[in-house]
Image 1 (cartoon, rainbow, N blue to C red):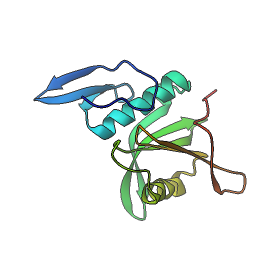
Image 2 (cartoon, rainbow, N blue to C red):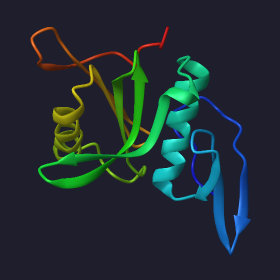
Image 3 (cartoon, rainbow, N blue to C red):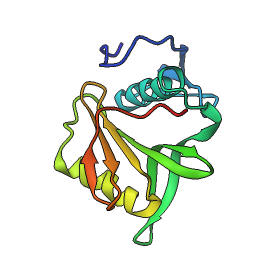
Length: 146
């Protein structure tokens, strides 16, 4: 199957359908094809829900946003007080967290104006915060929801 990631251990529902591995998405409430990126996304979702106290009902997966006239999909958006609060970009473990990946999430952030950004390939994580002046800076970890 897939390698262990740099997250706590979680219990996942995995099944096979049409010779494809499927994983149950706790937010979308359905089985989705288990790709390396999806493996990371499901770990991030579980981390947000079980370790950081985010409600699954306040998380959106693969949300469409309009950027420069084109529809783009955000991997995960967490909402707080009816506003986008945290934007997450997930990559497969073999994808480096390069400047291009940071630029991708920055483009989405320019639309959503979230205070927190999180990028993960499951092995490495990058947490960013928009400060009072609007500049993006590193932060230790994703804030707890409460």
